[in-house]
Length: 257
Ligand code: HXC
Image (cartoon, rainbow, N blue to C red; front, side):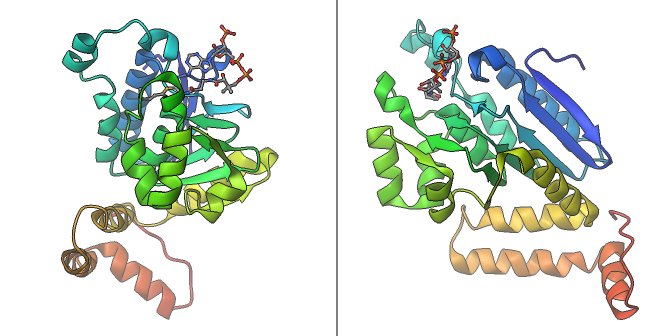
């Protein structure tokens, strides 16, 4: 497929989507939204891909939804087109997705990062939900996912003042899993993705599904769901291989089956 606002690469079992509107700091316009969703769904459908990395440039992961495109729209238009609902398709993707964030991740940029399974940040990363400064509120899940990630107090602070968090604060708050020097960000993200992609793909999907269930259900139901899925791992060849490899003191050769 030909894309204009993103780059799509494959490196062994890892798919890489790079947001590529440098002149607009990767602002998320409708074309970019369509292309990111299409590229990620294409990678998700590809059995030879075991993990996906979404990244931007050193200066900006993404500086938000495209304000220039959005500004003139009427209520009737945004309501009828259900503006930004297409981004929800990323939450149905089964392959693990890492956001590798350097520079600005603001508004929709922060929300896109939070739609990924986890965030690796460079030491230059800045996260924020500045929508209120434009007279709107987050519209791609920010008020919900930021609150689940960092708790009510900090989420309210961010969403009501529109201030940015630096990488240190984001790590302390649990928004990002780790911080790495900017120059190493992509290498670390790709290495991490390659590690995930080396695991059994069906089992990695089960693990992701189990963690995500914690956001949707009670603890007792979540623990029961986990146990049922844990039991199903014993139906895979990869469970037999993984445990045999441990006993035989060798590296496992997963067949993703
Ligand atoms: C459209 C954008 C943009 C955006 C930057 N640009 N962010 N265009 N939408 N979100 C464009 C600028 O207009 C400019 O284009 C070029 O990118 C470079 O940006 P500068 O502002 O010149 O760069 P700099 O001075 O380094 O400042 C960087 C910045 C600033 C602090 C990130 O660009 C900024 O504040 N951007 C907006 C951040 C924001 O409010 N995001 C939330 C959007 S709302 P020209 O043509 O002038 O060179 C959102 C809502 C989601 O995401 C859902 C609910 C509505």
